[in-house]
View (cartoon, rainbow, N blue to C red):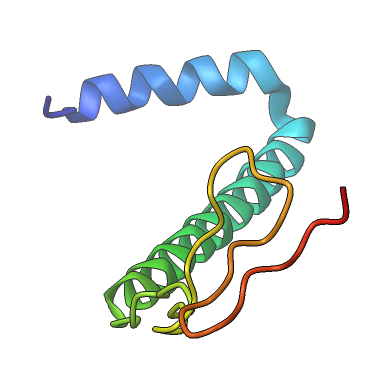
Length: 95
C-alpha cells in the first residue's frame, strides 16, 4: 500500500479538521509519549523472553528421591506394626 502525495495531503487536511490548529501540537505530543511507552514495554517483553529462554536452556539435574536403605523392608499395607528388618527379631505382642 503506497501512499502518494495526494493521499498524504487528504490525511493531513482531515487531521487539521479533527484537531484544529491549537490542539494539534498537544495531540502529536501525546501520540509520541504513547509510542515511547509502547516501545519500552515491547523491549521489556523481549528482555523477559530472552531471560526465560536462557533459564530454560540451563541444564538441571533431575531431583531423585532419597534412596531407601538396602536392609530396610517396606511396611506391609494395612499393618499397624512395623515390619522387622532382616536379622532382627520380630516384636512380641502382649495378648
